[in-house]
Image (cartoon, rainbow, N blue to C red; front, side):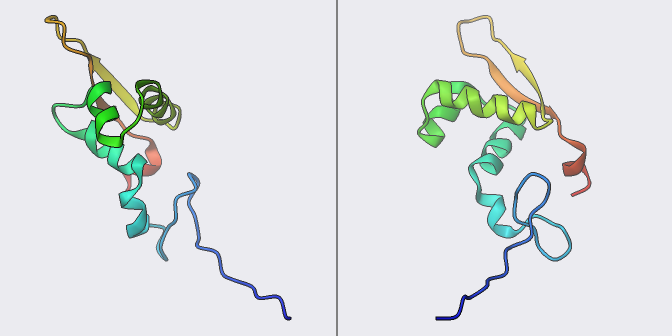
Length: 101
């Protein structure tokens, strides 16, 4: 039987699939990373408990995901309310490769 070759989808430096012009593909907009960035980009931000509930993650998994975003170049602000509510995280800076999009 002859060996079949398949074309692989082109990817950017982060490993996300990209289209012909280097733009992220439509499928990559629905990744957990993209959804997490969307939550953290909102004006109110998000707390660990809310993110954990949204993605059905344990709190340590949520903190690890935040850490991976931080390592990939995203910058966060953390606001602790004084009345016992958990800290809210909000994205304040994005990596340079995401600013052009």
